Length: 398
Image (cartoon, rainbow, N blue to C red; front, side):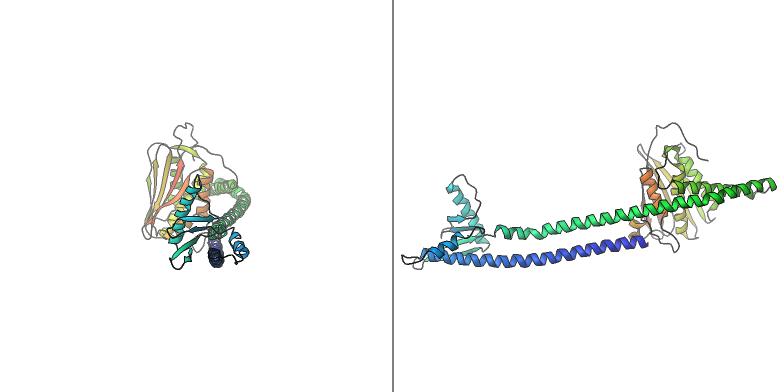
């Protein structure tokens, strides 16, 4: 639970930082665009004044400054149109046309668009005839680039945050894998010596108390410990898969758990009558089913209930459903049940379902997920495994 909360808080923090960066960028970009827009508008007014001076110039007018103002505009698109809207001259405009006449027609069309958006300055030519020209202008290339800049920056920030989150999750997963592998192999090593001693003591008990009915049961439990130690030793290495009858595996687990379940819990088998042979590591897969059984038992908390094991076979996939009538899983927790460290129990490491997911998906190339859950009604876990109906040789399960 702590691991899950820590990663979730880190992701929320990164998203918050990204939002702050984008918000600040948008504000700064907006201010820059506004200032540049006002500057270009002022330049257009100055340009219009220069053109007005040029239109009313006489022989005594010094045109050097006027021409300098007009010629220094190398960035802002400008189109000058007459009273009828026909383009007269243009500058810094990329027009379409095979000849000058076509270009003027295209310039007239664009000037009409600029006027429609209010981007023009009117210059009176003759007050008596009310003749005038309109200096139409558009945003410069720099201003247009600044307009798109925040969205480019937003994309860059989102990609950066996604990479950081991916690296964080990958690093955390690698760290967890190392811890699991180390703990598993150490547990298997530590269990080896006492299990050997227990087996020796059981042999002595068999000789001294040959009629004692509890001795065979003790032997079964010690062998069970051997299987558990073997499972721990396989964590971290790719286990060997062999053709196994899935029905035998499930029956073996149901029989074992049935003797150790509370009497208030009823086990129901909904299994096909024929064998289903698939590629499995029987020892590890039994661990998965046992974990699901234990979770189902815990969800009923000593109350009466039913655990049902159902198998559905298709041409390519075998579906194994393990359902219970327990307390169910909250909808907000369904996506977290397979995360390492997540648990709703007061005592628990939150590793059982995470290991089950690893065994099913990484080792057996299948899927495991919560198919259905409702508070107060129960939960259905589903396992999907690749089907291999043509396999002939079987590995029996004791």
